[in-house]
Structure formats: structure tokens, C-alpha cells
Image (cartoon, rainbow, N blue to C red):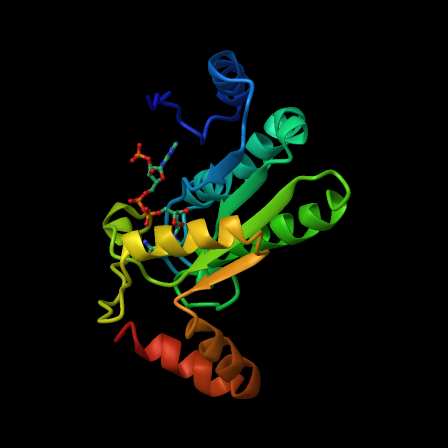
Length: 203
Ligand SMILES: NC(=O)c1ccc[n+]([C@@H]2O[C@H](COP(=O)([O-])OP(=O)(O)OC[C@H]3O[C@@H](n4cnc5c(N)ncnc54)[C@H](OP(=O)(O)O)[C@@H]3O)[C@@H](O)[C@H]2O)c1
């Protein structure tokens, strides 16, 4: 039967005890899914740096520390670390710069740690979703409200795609795949891309 332990991952001091709790429940960790995250909708000029620190704590430092603390257990099983990043980690969006930065940092963590652990049996899968229908935006920090999108994907389909990517030991999952086309557009027409993203906000 599943069990859960509640923890505030923005408080680094609590993480070692959290890992101890997990270790007391099981010595067999097949997969560590680093999913917790929060958004921040605000321009850099008006951003509250305390909110930025909270965001980085949850979206970047907590996953890094959790993966480090559970590494010995993952080494014994040849387990997988799944980071839930975002398409915003490779597609910069104005007024979401802090969130983009946190997910960009998470991408760099996953891609470099995977290479460092190549001979350890541990695998790292980085999941990069586009907008998904979970109510995520309504819980975000910052004073701005993001534009509506008709393209929000389904959390169930993303979970299924993530499971398949896990079974196939993929390094990366961009979901839905057409976000890669936006990335191409940005590289070929950077000015057009910036205007398009800013226009979305209608401000
Ligand atoms: N929805 C999207 O459009 C979208 C797109 C790209 C990437 N993502 C990423 O997907 C992941 C999941 O987001 P979601 O869409 O499912 O949003 P969500 O419904 O708001 O879920 C956020 C998750 O983070 C946890 N969390 C928030 N603050 C926490 C804290 N201080 N300590 C511990 N856990 C905390 C929440 O736990 P509780 O429920 O217990 O509060 C919840 O499980 C995030 O990393 C997000 O950046 C989402």
C-alpha cells in the first residue's frame, strides 16, 4: 500500500530527516520522481527577490539535494531519477523569467549528472512538459496572471508518456513534442519569437 510523508521542500534543513524517513520505510528505491515545483509570474524589474529565492529552493535546490541524499539507495538498485522540468527551461518566456531560470538550471543538473553517473547504473530522465491542465498557474507566486492557452495538455497523458520514457530509459521527454518546433522558431527568428511571446500577455 502507498504511504506518504508531508514535507515543505523549501526548507532545506528538513530534507535529511525526510530522506531518513523514506529510508526507514524501504531500502529499495527504484525511481525518484522530483515533481514538486511552483511558478512565478512577474517581470524582473518588479520581482520580489524573496519569492525568487523560494522558487529556486523548491524548483532547483530541493531536487538537487534529494537526488544527492538518495544516491546511495539508487546505486544499490540501479534506479532512475526523474526530474520534472518544463519546456520553459529551454523556451524563455517574458514575465516568467524566474521560472525559466529555475527549470533551465534543473535541465543543466539532469544533463550533467547523467553524464557523471554514466557508469553507476543510475539513469536520469528529464521531463519537459508544455502547459498542462493542473491548476498550476493559479498557485503560482508573483502578481501577474498568465495568458489563457487553448493548448493545455492532459496530466494523465503526460504521466503515461513519462512512464514509457522511464521504461525505455530515455534521457529526455518533451511533451507535447511540438514544443520543439517553437524552440526551432526561436533559434531561426529570435526577434519574432520574443514579440510573439510578449504579445501573448496583451500588456
Ligand atoms: N502544469 C503545467 O503547465 C506545467 C508545465 C511544465 C512543468 N510543470 C511542472 O510540473 C510539476 C508539477 O506541477 P503541476 O502542474 O502538477 O502543479 P501543481 O498541481 O501545483 O503541483 C505542484 C506540486 O508541487 C508540490 N509542492 C508545491 N510547493 C511545495 C513545497 N513547498 N514543498 C513540497 N511540495 C510542494 C505540491 O504539493 P501539494 O499538492 O502537497 O501542495 C504539488 O505536488 C512542477 O515541477 C511544474 O513546474 C507544470
